[in-house]
Image 1 (cartoon, rainbow, N blue to C red):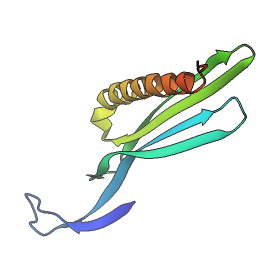
Image 2: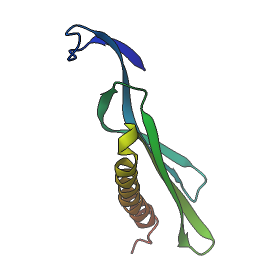
Image 3: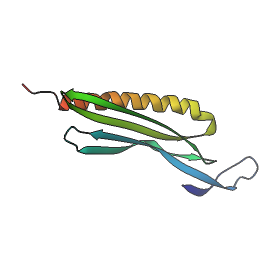
Image 4: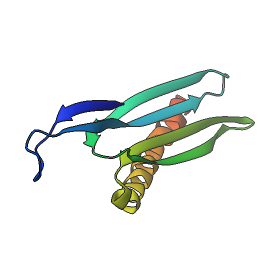
Length: 118
C-alpha cells in the first residue's frame, strides 16, 4: 500500500514523498488426522514505512507428524516479512528462526492433542 506523507528532507523541509506501508504476515495451517484443517493467520510486529517499495522475504516449513499407526497430522508454518534491500539476509535469518520455533510449538501441540489418555 502506498501513502503520501509530508516528510522533512535536507533539501526541502515540506517535500511530499510516497511512502510504502507493509507488515509481516504469518500463517499456520494444521491438517488433523480426521481430515479437518485449522488455519490461523497472525500479525508479527506492526506496519513499517518504506521510502521505496520493500522487498518481501518469506520462509515456509512443513512437517508430517506420525501420531499413531497409520495416522498422521501435518503442520505448515510460513512467515512473510517486508524489508529494505539491504536487510534481506538479516530478515531471512529472523524469518527462518521464527518459523522453526513456531513449528516446534505447533508440532508438539498436535502430537499432544493425539496422545492416548489413561
